[in-house]
Image (cartoon, rainbow, N blue to C red):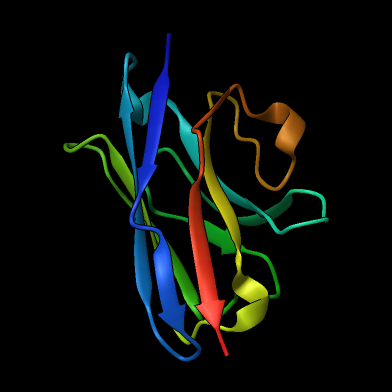
Length: 123
């Protein structure tokens, strides 16, 4: 069984930064591509970023491109989401997810999900 635990959320002013972490256990971390998704109140969960098994490639939703950076440390079994220049519209619960087959932006292809961490950006 794969466990994913997110941390690093909190309250930040617009223009500020946060770094989210997702610690994985129960599997060989490098066997899984990782993704980040978010869900704002009253909205559907949406794709934010994804990173390959090795960490050599990542891609982003247009809404966060240039502001967010996804990375991973396979030795530490952790993936990160560095969020800069935060905006109030980035307020959401952020989830990390794992897939063995490369889910990209497709939520249904992810096998395991964390419990989420709240990010609130004040204006």
